[in-house]
Image 1 (cartoon, rainbow, N blue to C red):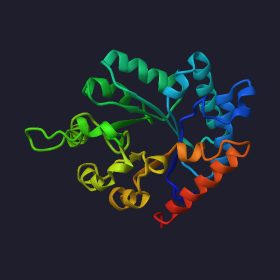
Image 2 (tube, rainbow, N blue to C red; image 1 turned 180 degrees about the vertical axis):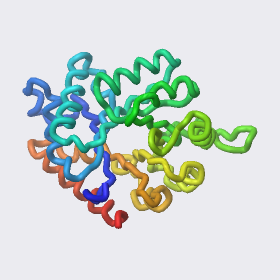
Image 3 (tube, helix red, strand yellow; image 1 turned 120 degrees about the vertical axis):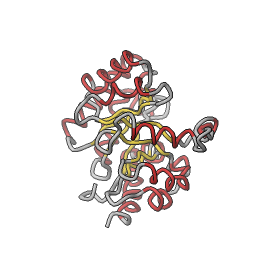
Length: 264
């Protein structure tokens, strides 16, 4: 992070209907697209975050593309942090199967997990040394306020209860748990940091969703940086021609240059 002067995560939301048309003649278009994006941005980011939905929608071919992508990153950029954006969360036995899939079979470093079903849906993901749970806390989507801001009888919003409970009762430490906090909710990051001052935050929402990197850093950065800021569409779809990888490099460079100002 400090060596590269960046805390950028590139989201690989690779949509077969949006990738450049000339790639469709390739044997594995999604992998060819991802490989080009990775080669163009690896020196500018610290993490990649494939979104499972974009691969699962293509059936077994999409899962194969995902596995090839993870293996390519592992082989060529072993220092890279790889996040499965899966938003899983189910009863304990099912969560064990999800954890085995992401951490044993596909060798991700972290997986996003929904906390709504409680501790037994989350803790199975925490049983892998060196692996991380990234818990959904305060998301950037339009409907997030439907539940996440509901104030309980104790007087705190639900998202704060999630933060407090997972950190104090579920064994969530800065060494095994991160939290998703959307960039479009940057003004609330100060309240988040009062509860979890040392955990890393995965922050989506800059770029296409309009979140402010300056505000994210102002309210969310701690003395270890403590941020992994994701940008997906603004980087990977910066151009749709044969020069798409170069355009992705240019956009990622622009974000990295902005981030470097906060890493002194």
